[in-house]
Amino acid sequence: MNIDHLRLFIRIANLNNISQAGDELGLSPAVASAHINKLEKELGTRLVHRTTRRVSLTEDGQAFLPHAEDVLSSVAAAEASVGMGNSTPAGTLRITAPASFGRMHLMPNIKGFMQAYPNLNIDCRFSDSIVDLVEGGFDIAIRNAELRSSSLIAKKLAPDKRILCAAPSYIAEFGEPQSPQELQLHQCLILNGLDNWQFEAPDGIQTIHAKGRFRTDNGEAVRDACAQGLGITINSTWSAYEFLQRGELVHVLKDYPLASGTAIWAVYPSSRQLAPKVRAFIDFFAQTFNGEPYWDKALKI
Image 1: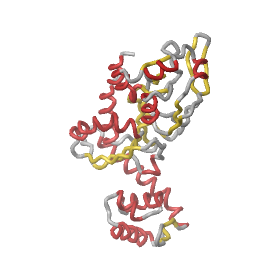
Image 2 (image 1 turned 45 degrees about the vertical axis):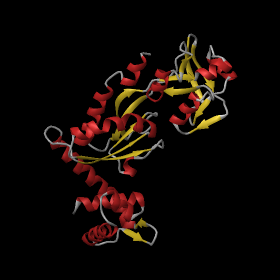
Image 3 (image 1 turned 180 degrees about the horizontal axis):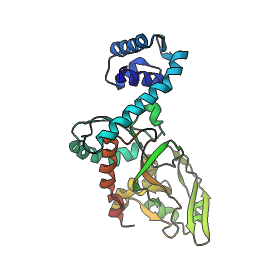
Image 4 (image 1 turned 180 degrees about the vertical axis):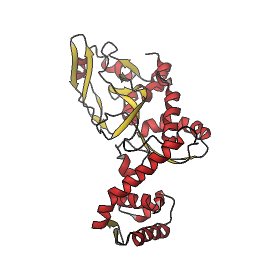
């Protein structure tokens, strides 16, 4: 049984599209369809229903899918068991990462990574949406959100320090808050999902429900709105450090640090052994960000 045919079948099951699945694996629609035909002929049963717009699994295809996934996991484990110590990472490494972090901190370092591993091809998806690694066919994800799935293994690459920021122009016009409670008198810029801001205070954790006229789903957009003087917001130092260095943003409420245990994580499915290409990525970027990452060193905060 051809492993590449199984890999294609699994992608078709996830995407419900032969052409798209084939394209991900470097196959033309005709070749992808031929591979599935060969797999069906070998098994003596039909695995997918084909229509002009999409495909879906037959009953036999649904029954076969978990077994195909188990075979690929076993193959990956076998390859990893003999490849960690002496095999050069090769093939295609599929990565998903938050859009802002990917653009600002993966891309400036990706050339060095590719030079270190010339047999690796890189396929990146930068999106602020949380992507299912297995369904999306990704080898590794960069995340700075809370990890909720026990089916994933996470390796910490760097801390994700978050601070409260405002533009000097905003402070000149509206003043600087001296306590978390005073934020109720200010315009707060809100990143979707982060309405409740928690601060470490002498008497314990204080939670403020942020309110304001501007809300967005993108970290760079909320940072830029803050730099324009629209209000006060939470920023990760990896996103805001250049603005802080230039004086376009200032750190406010320094005596009330945000209660946040966030970090930058490299995440991969626990059902897979740590393949050489994944290990290479984790080791390279853990060393690049190394303890106190360069963006925090630049700020000395």
